[in-house]
Image (cartoon, rainbow, N blue to C red; front, top):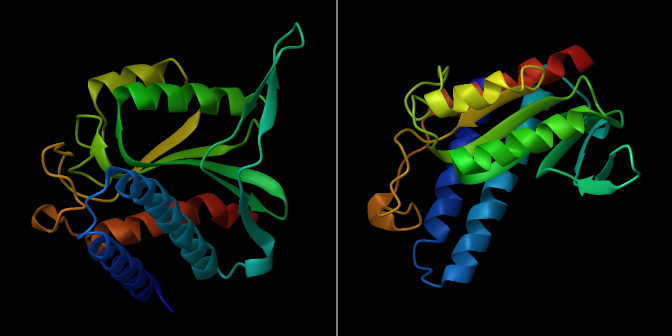
Length: 207
């Protein structure tokens, strides 16, 4: 399987799962679906990236184990993110998965990333979002320059290796939820391929 085939498989999964929720009207199942769907989609893409590199499936794993972040008085804070990727049991990539992200969420994600980095100095971080509410060009370009707000936040965390991967073009509109058939937005192959290639770039040095 090549990257063209892998990206098409991801798009097929996205289409199938999105269409399966179109008739659901209850808020609880919809919220649960949105979160779990993005996490599942992210894990699939990471696995495709690893397979495309020729990595052995037995070497990669995912979990949500919490790490204790401590201060100088012995207080601790248990911290984990949505998809924590390990190669040969080494924690190499921490991913926060969102149906969409706005700036207040992004600030929290960056703080958590900074705290995790105190324990894992070489860790890579990714915000993996279906849609964006971050402003700027996150919804327009696969290589975004960002937005003023996000760039300011990044300025104060220069050591954090954070990448934003946005799957769907067009800024999120809260009046047009994607779980309704009439507001469906496609996952384009260019963005699916870009997501695979980004994770390949992170994982390639670990082969």
